[in-house]
Length: 131
Length: 320
Ligand SMILES: Cc1ncc(C[n+]2csc(CCOP(=O)(O)OP(=O)(O)O)c2C)c(N)n1
Ligand code: SF4
Ligand code: SF4
Ligand code: SF4
Ligand SMILES: [Mg+2]
Image 1 (spheres, rainbow over the protein chains, first blue to last red):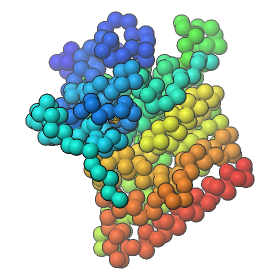
Image 2 (image 1 turned 45 degrees about the vertical axis):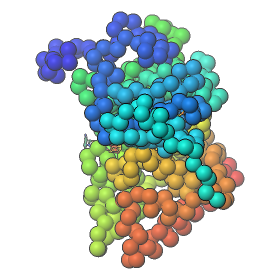
Image 3 (image 1 turned 120 degrees about the vertical axis):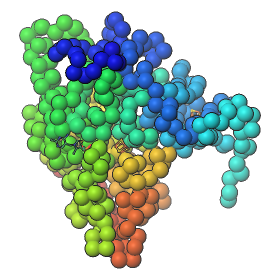
Image 4 (image 1 turned 120 degrees about the horizontal axis):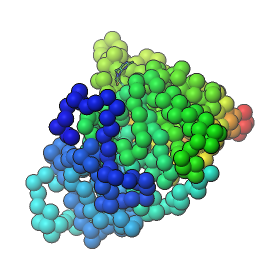
């Protein structure tokens, strides 16, 4: 379908974003949805990034600021806990890092090729508040 | 009426299942999608959505993809409002005739448009929808410029902003006319509910959106949407810019009920009010105002913002 040109469809053809019944999307989390290739969820913008956020769970207080202010639905929060980043949809804007209130921050930006484990192992220490 | 979604705090809100998807083509750090998420996540009811031509529409419906998990329509630049009003009118007619297949569902009708689509090109269409009091919500994504076509000024562009059609230079300080008071104009239609919102103040915003959804009749929402590309700031700073906009009172947060009952919904403490100068300094579109020749405009900006704040306070007090 993704390879069908826009002018190759019959008039009135429908592109569906979900397989089968999709009656209660607001009550269905992304991992339980049956997306088709016509939902942008099936696509990736990972190659837009120059820098990427890395999440150091130990410092996180689950405030959910990153969840609400991420423009790209890339902060994965489940059961009121922040559990990770959707690296297919994150564009590397850095907003989540800016709004993260912990000290040290639970999210920091690194070059796209940085290794997550290495960076978490050498996470910066708590910053002293300047008076 | 369906039950209102319970959103006591941000943790509870974060259990929402988004109906707006990533891998859309909006710029990194674009506030449009932060606004859209706060609107859509304010309800679990079915949605009938439209977008007028502009960044939001262009970037979320690129063939063969859509980023919308709800019925969504785009027709033209000017008529996101009437597309949704038409759907709402049909829905009402089918309901009256008892012909709805699922009469117990309570769809919400929402149209999104940029400031270009709303303050200028779709102006009369929105006015018609408000005047006819359709049971719908119109949301302006107000980035004060025609962003999608490269930054032309709109009637929402404020004084001193450098836009591609009002460029700043040695003989011009950019836009010379002041921003249109769209909230005032829409409230003057005596619609049941009009509100200005900002995505940084998510609680205030979601409360207003829910109030709008619970309102029978036309609802107008003006949402400030800092645009990293045209306002010229680093994408990571979108929320910082939104904070500066609300805390400098350049974008005061308030609502107008039935055209006359004005309530200020966010009142920063005196010591927390940010000088307008700081708001201007954070954006490339105002950079030239800091040259000696144009510095008087910064003072005028502050005076305008102060006067508007005093006006809103008087309106709130007078209840007229
Ligand atoms: C009738 C018409 N005129 C002009 C255009 C070209 N056009 C497409 S998007 C756009 C700018 C939209 O600006 P705005 O409504 O402020 O939305 P933004 O992109 O800033 O979010 C323009 C001028 C068009 N599509 N249709
Ligand atoms: S960098 Fe931007 S897109 Fe990526 S998770 Fe953070 S806020 Fe979301
Ligand atoms: S903003 Fe920081 S502390 Fe809050 S949930 Fe996100 S990562 Fe955790
Ligand atoms: S130009 Fe501005 S409004 Fe358009 S997608 Fe980019 S940041 Fe968003
Ligand atoms: Mg615009």
